[in-house]
Image 1 (cartoon, rainbow, N blue to C red):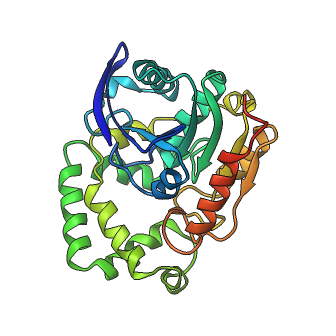
Image 2: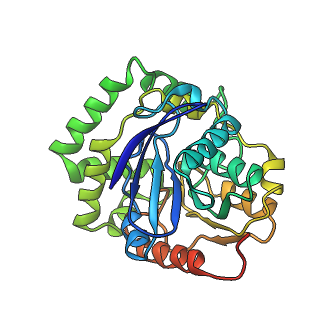
Length: 285
């Protein structure tokens, strides 16, 4: 694994590069960073490599890298130039969706294909939403360390009980149905991901990111949208909206219990659908 900091004209960008083969630029979701691992194994085993920058405000990536999705997209191009990468596949995960959309819209010559996974594709939260108000407090850069200390402590002491509480935030299904789709391995994966997560300054930046409809309509590259119809965190309407506005896009929604499509029953189907789409020849720009 290669790990480093790219000092670009837009600011410092922390990144990791794992695997060998065609490069997938993975724009991680909220509270994550360049150490993200969810869903990577199948990509690397299939002959791809995964480039993961810590998005603006996360890890050691400067906040000024991306006050807006447009600025962040420009910064991602600066990162590709720094690494001498001409074209990449792009995956936009959850709060990484807006940047992925702008990147594909503005730089179609640099993006082979676009994949949106549980992605935000339009206005997510407004300043009047309770979730927005709570998030602004508990994930504020000054308070987020305490928030995550409490989460990680509870997460490690009572992993299964914590998983029941945690997963209910991401699905409209009831707890019994959610847990029926989890294995002990999945519970351990949840424990591990929460141990490596932090909001830093990034999540507050994410709350201000938005997507304009014209960005979706301007996308001309092959696009796959993977989303759960039971997603409580980023409602399924985001997937429907993207599918409606991105010409010839493909939408897959079956088999997933909720927002975290890389965990639990359905993850193998996600891997299969995604690899098939990446391997499909003849329609790349």
